[in-house]
Length: 118
Image (cartoon, rainbow, N blue to C red):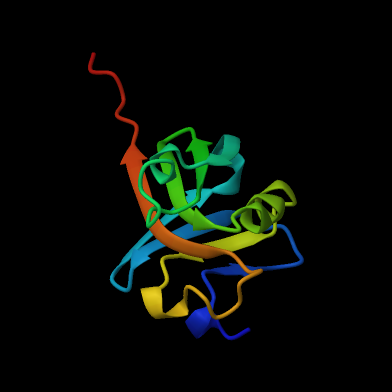
């Protein structure tokens, strides 16, 4: 699958950094060594809103929390677990049904963790 209609890139080697591309102009990278944990759960908003993303992948880094909304996100969680995830990006809606078995990312939310003031 070409990068144009894929929401991720992976590598068979260890990736020292994971990059999240929230749009074509904004890229946020986090060191893989800062990964604390991740959770893949059904998106609670999808219960009441059938057009909402069906899954929510929450990733905690020491400096930020990242939430990825979409479908088939288990594939991304597998790559994350194996330290093979290199980039994750939001895809335009026109790509939502291109490969139904592949992950599709509708939104990436990044919340920086502020250091306590002294």
